[in-house]
Length: 261
Image (cartoon, rainbow, N blue to C red; front, side):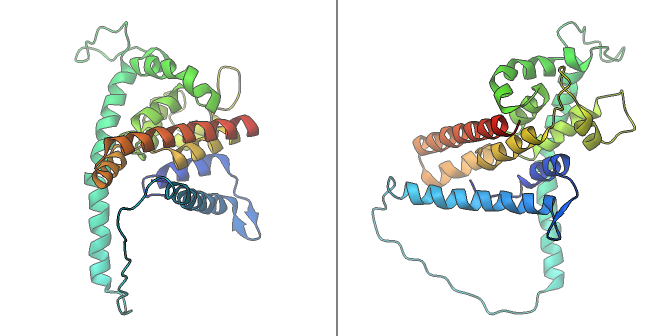
């Protein structure tokens, strides 16, 4: 689970776009270097974890690796095109359904609050986002996530991304699309210009790095947990991995934020 998966890419893409400039280093853009660095971070952490775990997890029998390399041929473009369409369809029907369901739930929780009378068919709710059920949930999390540099919106994003990592981007899009003060701005522009009550930018460089590190290390996906259990046939190892990776993600992202802020 330390290896960079496709579900992390939407999170990496939006955060890197927010905190890195369009400058270059020896002709290579900072954003490209940052994305490549996230891949290397996951790869290096996987190797380190495997090196450590081999002293704790012993194989009962010998294992052999047999690799049969196929002959190299020209790509079958028609087959490749069908394969790409199939992968896109799997995302839309898989993660897409989760994102849609979460977005509907977020919309409801963000438009209604404890003082609302729920007459949804008679009038538009006048509850502001800051007083909604969603804000109440997020602000309950703030004491825990504030050392990482996150506000309540990011807390809600992290919470919903347990369904699938890429849901974080959908959650941020939903929350910032609810802001009617600047409807002409894009979601990324709203995220970039958002500030905390003390005037500090919500998505500062330190906060952005903290989010990148958190998602690089966190085992934050229900499907990943299910696969780990299927492979290990042990709730013990699944729980150990979940707790360890979550703790590592929290500690590492906190240290990064406190160092760069």
